[in-house]
Each structure stands twice: as structure tokens, then as C-alpha cells.
Image (cartoon, rainbow, N blue to C red; front, side, top):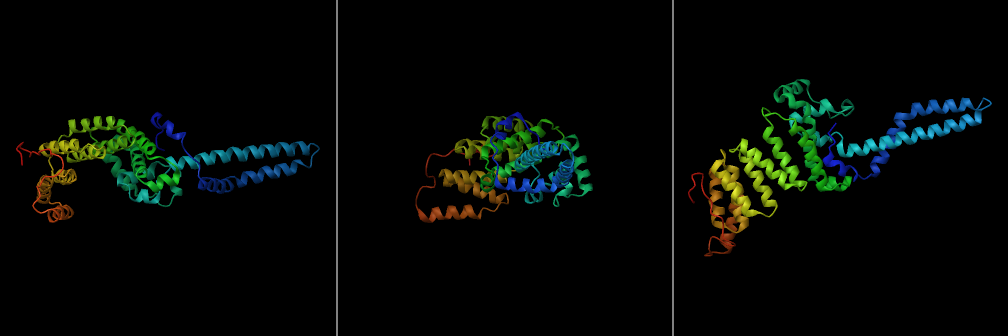
Length: 327
């Protein structure tokens, strides 16, 4: 099952019960304990025929009530824990990456009782060989991905009474567990850290996310995804100029630049710099991206304000190409 860490200990105290947990637990209680209850009641009835029947009946009744109360509490706790930590829903399982499907079906208790938790054994062996030693820890990362999705779902948060920040924090704990057990040979090394950075950001720990981006760029300075993810985090924090600077660095260093051009076109447009928005829209199109929506937004501005200067708003940050010359 997913890993419980000190980081998310505070979140555990915030869990709230829901009506579905009560109904589920009562049904499960009846199904699971019917046989035991019947035997205990029969013993109580037989005891009434003896001289000490009254006293034994009272003892049996008290023992039965204690037994029912204890198991009800245990099942309620288990069900409430499953709302937070349990196996993924059918939709979450079907939309998970293949390596997560393989690991989910090999780690959860009673997975054979859940119809949709099925995956070919040959695929499990393939991913185990491909990922090596970290494979046995991958269910923590995969459940962290589930939590990332839940943290960004307002309907899930309302339904289960959780706050997004707490769910992001729990996701960071799960993903971080696998990252600490990771090896440099893992083909998912970069992907896992990008997801961990997103969890850190959602949990309010931007410093941890920034440090993680530095680690990623130290090892992979040419990876477009790192520059884009870091720039998007800066933009979400309202630091648009910083986001542009990050992407300009990516333009100089990254191997694939299409996504960087796309982001720069939108950032410059939102900043009010139509001139550079057009420049990077053209570059993105040349890189094979569909920029029809941006072209329409630019055209709407041109038709609404003919003869106006091409740069509006605050002064823009002049971009540079990969060779360092201004466009």
C-alpha cells in the first residue's frame, strides 16, 4: 500500500467521515461477520439452559457488543483510509501509464476482488525488467500520480472533504518515496522529478520545486520539458518576466524548441508584446505546431487597432536566439 510519511501526518488528522463510508461499512460488517455472530448467539442461547444461564447470557451479550463495536470501528477506519490511500478508481486505473497498471495489479491487497484491476503477467515482467530495482517501489509513485489528479479535481475534493494543498502534500510524500529509492539508470528519472516538482508547488513548497529543477537541469540541460515546467510554475506565481527568462534560456540550450516557442508566444501575448508574440508564433509554426488560435488572437488585435504600435503594455524582455543574437 502507499507509504505514510511524517510529511503527511497532519493531513491524516483532517480526514472527515462521509455517509457512504457508514453504509459501506455496515454492509461489509454484516457480510463479513454474520457467521461469527450466529455462532456466538447460538452459544448464548445454549448457555441459558444451565444454572448459570442468566450470568452467561449477560457475558455473551457484552462480548458480542464489544466484538461488533470493535470490528465496526476497524472497518470504518479501513474504508475511510481507502478514500485517501486505497486502490485507484476504474477511470484512474484505465488512464494510468502502463507501468502503473502493471504495478497496481501486483501490489494491492485483494486486487483479485476488484474486476478492473487486471493486467497481463507478461507486461508486468516487461516493466519489472525495464525499470529494474525501482520497480518494487513504483506503486508509491503511481499512487502519487493519482493524488496529483485528485488534487486538481474540484469535484473529488468536495466529495471527499479534502483540501487541494493537503492532497498535493500527500502526493509529494508518495512520489518522493520512490524518487529516494531511484537509480540514475531509471528511464523515468526525469519524469518522476517533474511530477514531484508539481506536487511540491501545489503543496506550497516552491523552494523545494526550484531546487529540484536545478538538479534536473544539472543532469539534463537540453531537456525542453524542464524549462517549460519551470516557466509554467513561475507564470502561475505571477512571475511572467521570470517565466520568459527561463524559456529564453531553454531556447539557447534545449534540443527541441517547439514547445518553448509555443509558451513564449503566449507569454508575450499575455504580456502585451504583440511583436514578439508574432515572432514566436511564426517560430512555433515552423517547428510544426498548430498556432491557429494564436493567429486568430493576433488578427483580432490587428483588426481592432489598425495603425497602433505593435508593442503594447509594459516594455518587453528582448528575446535572443540560440546563437545569442536579438530577433
